[in-house]
Length: 210
Image 1 (tube, rainbow, N blue to C red):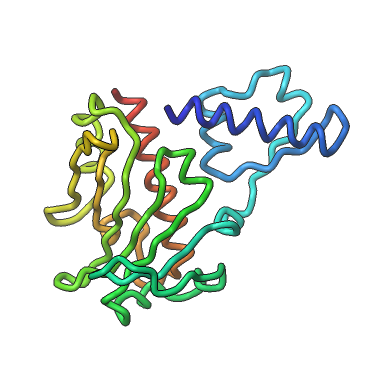
Image 2 (image 1 turned 135 degrees about the vertical axis):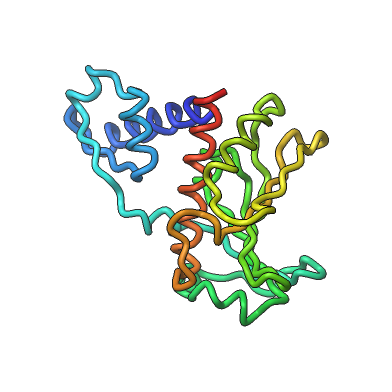
């Protein structure tokens, strides 16, 4: 569950900073989503709060160690492996390269139960499609569909959701244009930060409302 993974990550980061800073009162940097989640769900014990200062980390740093590929839609073969500078490209790059999709991996995706994300421009509708596998048990199906319908604002179909029994995860595709805050002027990096935020909140709400 998200809560367990957050606690594990939080504990690890506190211990790392205590070792590095070699003092009782240490500073621990967390990204906005994890920091707010930890506060709301009271994951930080009072005795720890007295010794730790939590600081919000620059969101752009979440992408610093990401693994990025440009791939061919038809063959799914890699066209090129991209460095972090590629994240500055405008999202419309995909509409100029309609035969391609972007494959994205990050250590942070593990926290929300996602291995990787693929992003492409739809050839027919001109929208952007997000594709991923989501590690949630099948018992969450009803509330997962409810939350997807609540979070996505647009015409049907908003998303496609199928449980993969072989892998034990949900194959989820959704229309990025229907996510709150979407703009055509986004960069590729801003887009992946938006997708991460969307998925983090989705998993949080699914588990909270089950």
